[in-house]
Length: 72
Image 1 (tube, rainbow, N blue to C red):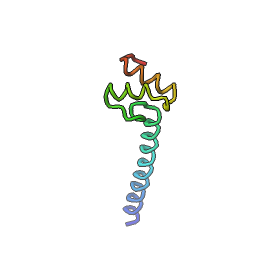
Image 2 (cartoon, helix red, strand yellow):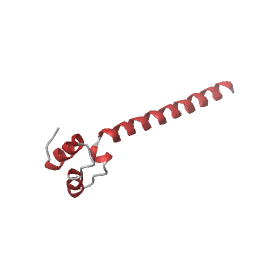
Image 3 (spheres, rainbow, N blue to C red):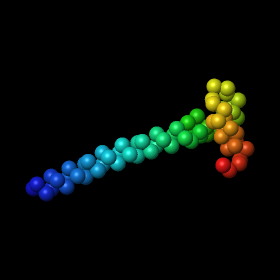
């Protein structure tokens, strides 16, 4: 019985750790990916964001590269 409780506890702890690791990875990806960060789904969205002065210059340059079809 103790063995079963130990195995179930270990699996539960593993699931919790994996949940938080995946969540942190997705957050990091969202912060680094301009398409996800600014919710760009089409070239029209990209063009609007390129002309938005509230977006940092670095991000606007990345959006422009993607809009022009250049690989970075």
